Image 1 (tube, rainbow, N blue to C red):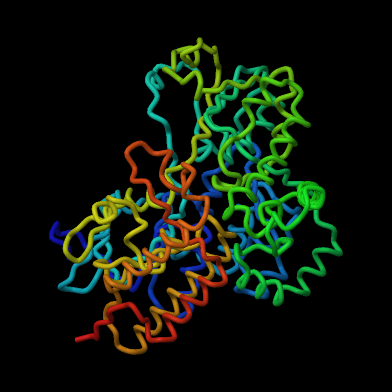
Image 2 (tube, rainbow, N blue to C red):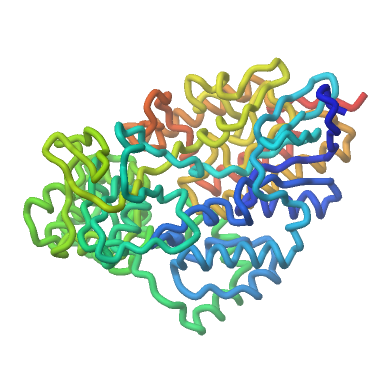
Length: 540
């Protein structure tokens, strides 16, 4: 019983989130015999794919790689329709997985975890949901996603707007009809780039409010040929191994040399081929595009030349041309994004030059003037990496909130991006300082889930009560992450990676840039050495 008199449920593990991470974590723990419950804020499975239903939302990793690989049967039973399927198909896939492995009975939907406090006396996590239910668990595992807390800008006057407004990360389940309406889209990150061309086809007029122009490469989506699907399914064991050993969890063509080793003519041919093929291969055309300023400039110049080639109006070309280092913000794939600005019903406003002042009852006002709007769409991204973790009151064995421990930025406070000192038996799936968002997420998720479940089995089999990173191991890992990042151009650009999109957030780079394959080997070596860098305490 809890102090309030309400009954407390006892479990081996509690998992937060029923997306790719939570579903597989539940499957693994249940197969190993652990009593497990998943809490999910949404009304069904899917994680970000449950919430992100905005027009044009689709996967930007090849679907045959953006999937679970743990089950050969699942790989053979499911067939993707195209290279980059849209959100409804990905959601159907995750529902298929949940049904195939009968996962729903152990998932509690429409439930947010309010707090998780570690009780050192019982060596258990005391967890409370927003509806007041209490659960005690030996292990607390977060599968909340890295970009799942919507960043809704605090713009003066939003509450006075008489039209409809939406955020791409919290899109309604029913279809939004833009037909004939005056629509404003604020933001041109990935969700903006995906949604703008689709909305433009429906709206009476679309006004895009852009702060930072983006480098974006064509996706070149296409339906899969049955012969390709058959060949892929036959070769999945080899593909799975290649994905796990790769740098980004993707299979892409690369020259495996510096961009500066080729002549300008040779480089143009390489970039042109990657541009025509579409996808993330462009970013991997050469090995040093995010390492060397001169090499980076060759890719940036190529994309800027493409913008000049595609977009007709010179003033719009100027607004759309990025000046930051190519690839140091989230890589974006598009379908007819630049082409959309040739439409008569689309206009582009540079809000860096003419900032947004306020939302009015009938539209949006910048320093230059007012735009009358019927609908506002905020494509303003997320409080990435730590935002969703901070929404839960997670407290250490000493009662220190996780948010307080990481007040100066997550970069200096995790071990392997999986755990953090002072918080025994807490595991984070794709947490800060792991490859996470700079990798093909399902590949990184599977690696973390398998490592965590293997670890928990090891603890049970060896009579170990708790596992917790040593402070010195945590400091060494964070230092290594920082050194790897500092050798790149990523740290020279403000982005949501660094928290620059959130007012008052500490600027850090909490992502491991050493590559998916090398990172996997590091984690495996830690486990092989009896969980080196962790403090293990035996059961009494």
